[in-house]
Image 1 (tube, rainbow, N blue to C red):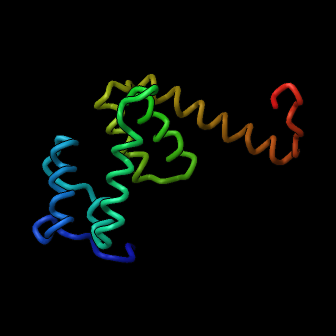
Image 2: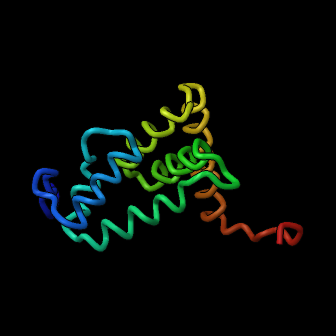
Length: 130
């Protein structure tokens, strides 16, 4: 159960309404996702998070699809179902196929397994890797 109530779009005013409108415009969606509605309880957090996300996720040395795939991978590792679903949907819109998703899941699973083994064995980092 959530700690706070989501802010309904119809109740959004001022900065929150402006950000909600920008989210819908940029994402080409008609309804504000729950994540943003919960963040709207604290307008400064909503604004900071939206601005930071736009900055980080824009095209750069990594293309938008690659960034979404990385986001999915980290969300899987952090067990954030909401973020997994949200960013998988975004990655699909940008061209991710089922085959790519299956391969991503295999890589995330393998990385988590080998990371745990390295940490359990307390493996020293090879000098040639430094």
